[in-house]
Image 1 (spheres, protein in one colour):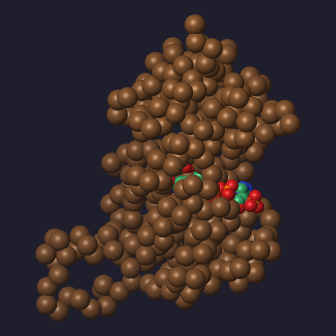
Image 2 (cartoon, rainbow, N blue to C red):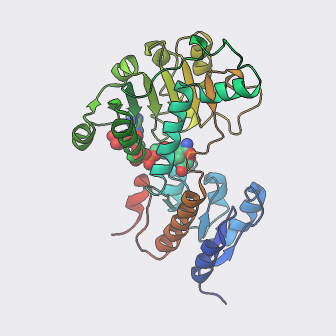
Image 3 (spheres, rainbow, N blue to C red):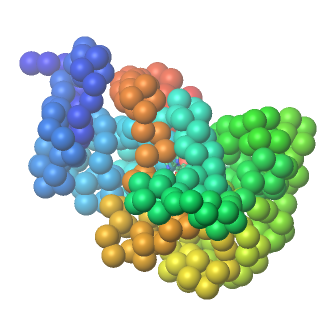
Length: 327
Ligand SMILES: NC(=O)C1=CN([C@@H]2O[C@H](COP(=O)(O)OP(=O)(O)OC[C@H]3O[C@@H](n4cnc5c(N)ncnc54)[C@H](OP(=O)(O)O)[C@@H]3O)[C@@H](O)[C@H]2O)C=CC1
Ligand SMILES: O=CC(=O)O
């Protein structure tokens, strides 16, 4: 009988990562596209000590009496019910750092795309609307360079965005997080602001906080009302940090100029979401970290975290559950 811990993996992993997990665990993999159906997870998790992937909640935990570690191949872990995990003594791990640059690149792409109307004007050319005499002021966008960027959530990814914006595009930087950061102020000539001040003064506003009870609907009608009517709003954090109905209303009423969105309240977002028919809104299917190299790095880190945490080694354990691990 195997003495290796039983591990359940709920989505397809690169072969090299499966090989690594097979060395360290008695693994059940999912090799089809998409994720293992929830009913299959609930069935197969009954004897697992480690799980990689899936939503971890009371329902799953009560089916998993032997579970010790849940690993996610993402830096965000709002799909972990932290209270339930604590009460079942299950540690959670995630994948910080390895995706920072890839996500920051995407945020800059959203800023450029919404500000310079790239998606809208790409469609304009392809639909044959570009004709003699039509390339005048109606095609103007707003500059990214030398504009003021306000980043809400100056963490790992926030800093990677700041680096690109300040050193690449000469932007002025404001930021808001739970506390000011001296090294950020010095490195980027940035200024820490309270949220309202940032919203009033920024040309581009980027939300990059985790989704927590405190950040749910951090940006709603009151906050959109504070923004400049020329502001471009970017959300690449989680859909629920923003009140999506308030965003729709702000765009419909011209309270802000445009938006770039990688995340939505419901994902995949329904095809009748009014945001999808607004030419001044760039919409992406939650692809912040979606390059082959970065997704591979994330899968490797998620697997290593799982094995290390099961064996009492070094892993990226989520902040809120670190105290469950004995020193
Ligand atoms: N679209 C995508 O594909 C991706 C989305 N993400 C999302 O981005 C999030 C951030 O990732 P990462 O940068 O690694 O995380 P970090 O933990 O490094 O940074 C989060 C930042 O948010 C700030 N913050 C937390 N709570 C609040 C609050 N209540 N009010 C204001 N600021 C707050 C933190 O402030 P402080 O420093 O003061 O504690 C910190 O600066 C992830 O949790 C995930 O949800 C991540 C990757 C890809
Ligand atoms: O959304 C992606 C993540 O890593 O978090």
